[in-house]
Length: 221
Ligand code: CTP
Ligand code: CA
Image 1 (cartoon, rainbow, N blue to C red):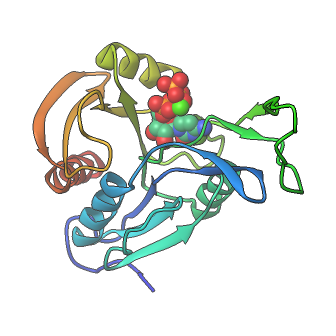
Image 2 (spheres, protein in one colour; image 1 turned 180 degrees about the horizontal axis):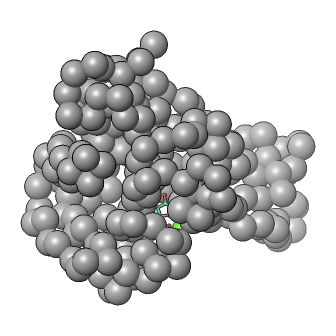
């Protein structure tokens, strides 16, 4: 059990992190999902634990090992992720790195069979709750610092700034995924806050995690 350290700059703090994709079942054998390796979120959880925080990592399906000292809660769907986030409160800071599926399907109880005439089945999709916005506007237990990620291929900074306002987050970490970022070891982040935009330049995801955790530490102290 990870109780958090008595040492380190984040000792006594609780950090809540989401990571990975969500899987939304269509039927017992199929799902829709976002692309996400979980690497960035896991690196942030590891860095926060190294800094002495108690860390709850709410994780969608990924193939990564749990970082040392981190309490991991495995979920599959966005609705399960939302419930696990709520159950993990209170937290001093929340970092929502997960690539949450925007919709779930009204899942069929039995496997959908291919019709003989080749007509594709129609999927009826329902919007998932916005976990980040729900946390940022939480009526009773809003974490002091609420951070979202925005993975974009176009208009990176404009989209990130719009998400900062729309979701009520304190910071948005804008992630340019037009190149070879998905699943890779490197990333190019911008930190978008009400105070402005910082270009962090391309670096290892581990180094970006350490840098973000240092900024969180500063902000909480
Ligand atoms: N997010 C969330 N719950 C959702 C969707 C997104 O918590 N149902 C969070 C993500 O974890 C991320 C941030 O919101 O921190 C931005 O996610 P993104 O998919 O970029 O935002 P959307 O509002 O879904 O916009 P888009 O149309 O670009 O997908
Ligand atoms: Ca989305």
